[in-house]
Length: 228
Image (cartoon, rainbow, N blue to C red; front, side):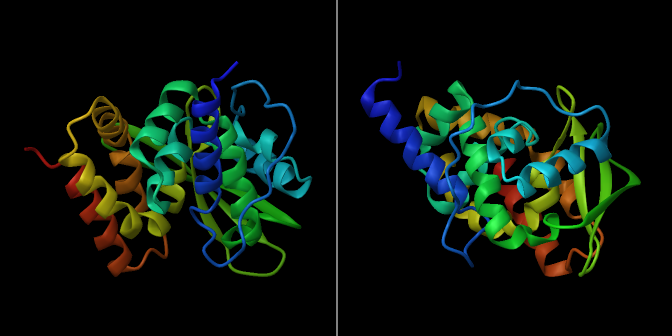
């Protein structure tokens, strides 16, 4: 059983992650559903279709497996999660955080993944040796959007490649603080952030990404990869 102090830290991080992309709404809804096995889907389109189904149910615990592991924990930096809480989630798993992330996402900017939504394969993006599968989602009303998916234990949504445009400007300052924080937690987070650099660079290639947003993403990449 998780000690009380660590449980409190994790619950704070869960709530923080649920706010990462939902500044326009009141936050996510915690689900009590048992977390599913840690596996993705068999194809990129199937991953997006499963996400749409889970959000529509709603079953955000089921949706949690459809985010690449660690991404939701790292995204919590954008909303002020402590380095200790983020590092704890990286060590112990962030499925619960991902569940609450999708809950908040569905209530805010993720409306394009609700209702009658079609998904279609739209080719691949290769970045630094990593292959991203682009899936175009088209809601019954509204413009098509691109979701980038990778094969990580099955196909899952890459949060940074798909939604980096909403994260970059909020994450730059926390990452700059990480660079001058000489702790094991800070070093673990920085190492994990190195892994999402290809995802951030892929986000700049998503159709419709504004030039100013691409510059924000590149500025975050510069900080993550800064030496010394």
